[in-house]
Length: 401
Image (cartoon, rainbow, N blue to C red; front, side):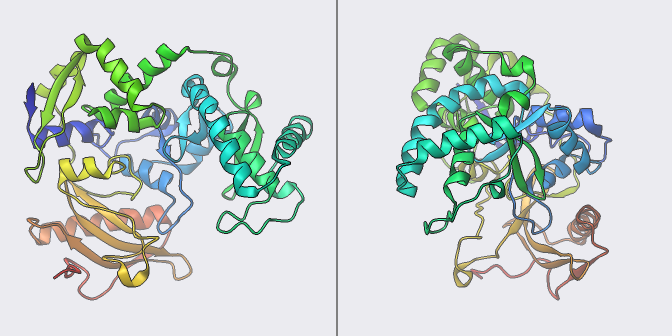
């Protein structure tokens, strides 16, 4: 079994996640489509502490990213569509045939789960009515349907909204556009390009694509990481694929940052030579979205980068270690700390509360200058006119100190 150094494993993953390219390069609309295909998907999130997650993720890879290009690729060119991976995501439309396998699994799971949630024996009737309304009258939003919201706790959805979400997550409806951040639904056959809508792939081709393309984007991966990447496969699917394609895979282990036990992993044999020429990532600082795909698998992040991270949105304020929404900070091939910042648009300022460095990172003037340069880029990206700093913000005391 080949042993890979921690530095090489980090750089391999960074390169496969599109973070080794010059972030100042011109991207353009076609380049954006290629970048998203290279990532596989981009998670969508409504929280806008600085910018919404999907915009921030793409900006981290090119500071020339334009939101209008993303909208055009989804709403006009139809090269991208929105559905689910592990969460709501923007996905290349060419992948839609593979998502049909997810849709079939979702039909039984969601029907049972949501019918029980709403205690609504008419859920099938609601689904039929909503489907018919969209088919006949065209694109619709949840607010276009009448009905009182049931007292159902945190979801607080009325039955038509549940039906829309069910039809979307099972592939009959697609998001044709958004108004504000509200979904506008239409029949998938009117949204997904015909060549992708009509194409079918069988189970074996689907599993082969999902495993192989997950490995391409991860560089190297364990069985569990392959299964989790798209959230399309079961562990049994991955095990069977590995057995069937053993000759195409090279078993590897990567040293961990903290010296822990390496996870048995695989790399595609056709990519083995990549290990001998892994590119160096740019040395500048980049502030990442908490939903960046580099960080999605928290265990992998901790193994490769020695960086423990969690979003504390749902942690009671008194129990938070850092803050409501704290951003990881990457410099070169290392995650050097985390920063608490917020775009206060009513005050026209990017307010920086604190930067906490990771153990072993030197609190140098060069690091501070690099962070301030990135904050200036983030300021322009978020559309505010200045950056403000709280006293003692740089290398603030850790909560446990």
